[in-house]
Image (cartoon, rainbow, N blue to C red):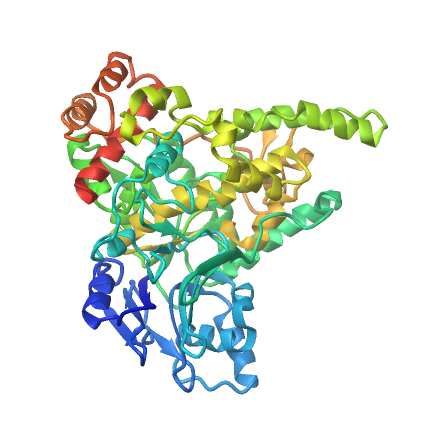
Length: 608
């Protein structure tokens, strides 16, 4: 785990003081080692901080350069194929002075130019400076596991792994972005490339940004869209591909020679990871489960059963519910921008509980997005079955019927939204409103374009591809990254390997669900590994109901936070109306109040 940053100026010199200020704002992400580089003309600088996780060796110094010091790079994350690339570059005559993966990136850039990101396999965020061409490049991995933020004012590029490092820069525009606020109220997160701040942006996953002296431009270098005609493969080929690619991803992502473990819920995804790792024969695997003290939690029981089956060294971590006024503010302090995801509290508690036990942990997160989430994709599954039943023997007519009966994209966006457009208009004060634009489908045109690009052959595949491009990086992965930083643990997600993503999105519907059984193809692929009771266990919508984390005082706390706020964002009358409803017992009402509470606690902690 590490932090990267950089400043590129076209008019004035970069000072070491300002570069250090940006770098050292991320000390929690990298408290142990640090490096700095200022270019010869003082128009650019790079910074790096790193953390020595449990069982890891001292990391090579960054920033790293080529032989003549004209190309420099910093990297956060892990390049899984770094050793293979290094061997190839060594044969091409490049001279290495360290074992740093940043040095591999530098020499790969010399060989491939701007095409170098397509050669990298792993989870990474990169800043690269080419002094010969006076260009700077930013690169983010294919799924957005590692964060990368930037600000551009026409003459200066500033980038960092954390928003707070950029927000503290002199004269930075850190006003709340009404569009970002609107995103958050709809989805519980702010969608790329926006952030909650007007002057700061996120680099989207699978993108490379180029900065010249007077302009920036970006492009994508990878798409999750499946290979053409992937759905036409024989069923057993899909099953074999899923099994082999999960194995391949585990071999890459499970660290050798470091203290590592697996988060085990006893569900299909985490059990598949633990089971396949046990077949590798690399010694005893450590597994961990999270449950509530004093309860026989179903996940804890299944996790113990899976552990016994595969002979793992297992520990059940039981937590006591805590007062809401203690737990929620503590979690909010770790966030760069507001997040209302349900995974936030479990991720925060898991990361803090595992602190000191392991340095790296593997998780089955991401499986729902790839293999189907019944609670999220039920409408799409039902509509897809109807569309696929329309076989009339006339291809042109079938295509016409398919287009006519496909669910409006606004249906899916409405299903995802916490607050509707009308509710947001009543909630938000006038100066913070985004004008209504004719419904959800018109409000997020990029969502529709990404869904169509990811799923050209079926509606459901498009929605799953959309989740991979939006919800995963902007919500789930952001939550995991921030909680891991706070708890000093690195969480890896082997089910989100790019090759596996493309394979999963290319699975035909009859293998995604069959006979009412969801995630059918994954269950078939894992039948040789998992016990039957785990293999066919029904999916759970959420491992932990949020209310279970709190011992008392949630309603009074929520009222105090929202009605006692000095913010001018939300209308008090609308907030009072929310509290008059039985919101604690109503999932939709609870989601609305939770979203607003998390925003207000973030505002207090990070944007007073």
